[in-house]
Length: 305
Image (cartoon, rainbow, N blue to C red; front, side, top):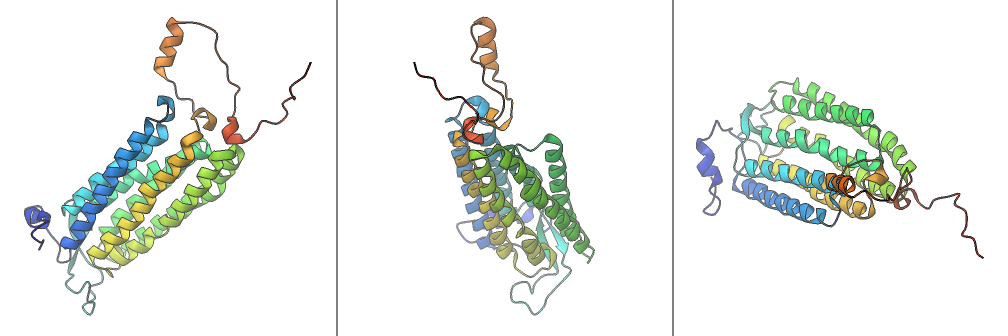
């Protein structure tokens, strides 16, 4: 039952079926707090995009999209919506936290969030490192496998759920390999701010992501912790993996342009201006800019009269 301040659980008790073990008012309050935090960072990231030219706002839009989708997801979970009851594999009658469980609440809204936001997180990193498109697509596919198997496992009441957990964990190891070896090699080629930003954010993200299978095993999988504890565990991880990650990434991108990463983003207003006002063009050399790749070598020193 929810308290006098937060009536979401009472109001939405008539929506769909409910599990024996579900969030309390404390869990709902926490979800709403994370929702507000995600919303605030979405506004912040969009505001920061105005400090860059339109053709260099890609990373701001991606990062704002991540927290924006998470905001909606956390609103749903705080309202006790986007959930379904699933028979718990482990009843644990002696546990003080999950003793009422015959069925446990599973938030499929969380997985809808992840199936959108986790590929965007990887896209932030892989584009920063200048990874080729085929490698990006393969890594994103592994990510979708990871999330899909996690959802199917969470909705499975028998021990076969752990098979899906194993498939998802294997996909996570593939993602870690791509980030720590392949993408790092490309980032080292770029050098400069791109390399520093990728290394910082990449290590942060993959370190956090390896805690998600642990959270899954303690909540949807093993029914060890209460849904309120599940809310805090996942919420802290999501805060680190989305707003904190986003701040660090955009700070690293403050002096990086899209062209320095090999991204050719056309500004149509500039193209129209060149069409109707032809004039001499300032042709830039190909390859990473000086801020990304370091100082240009091999340039002849200035001559003196």
